[in-house]
Image (cartoon, rainbow, N blue to C red; front, side):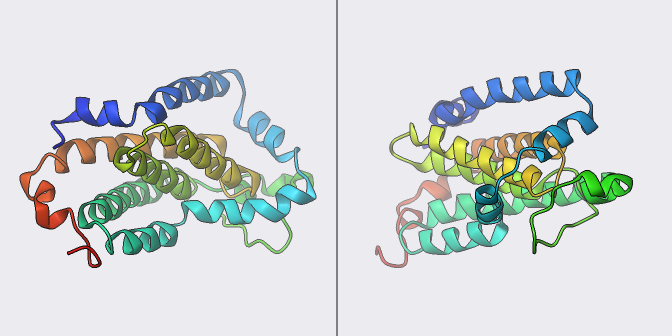
Length: 218
């Protein structure tokens, strides 16, 4: 049974510890460079190959992906499915509250006078509002924390961290978000999920035998 925050932190350490170093590096970058500098540095690096794969990578952080994964998990383990879907709902709700509270423009609107300098992936619809924070990044990091927490081999946290980082990068590559949106999105996903797991998974009901089976596992 989960005995609190210390237990959760220990289980997700392979994701959490390197993430903290990456987060600190992101904060340093933000202190040293402007929004304009960071955005155009990222946008200037593009290839046909990345143009073709980044739209698919970004779907990993889509809510539909987590919902489908939760639906699959309910066949085998109610607890795992519950932790994943509730973490998604809670972090997504937090992200939406922040989005509408700050109501920040996305790159296409923010750099409306410099659109001729921006590389856009052909055929992709580019959003213009509610930029901060990145919801896809929130979801990717939240799911990464939950799956790491549940996995028997905790070293999978390193792989899941990489996947979440790639989702965050895809949001910037596709000009859907700024560096700040992705950085804060990652923090929201990790922190809110960590707090939720520390609270809910210590409850006796979710660790009962009936919650540790699924529709296919009676």
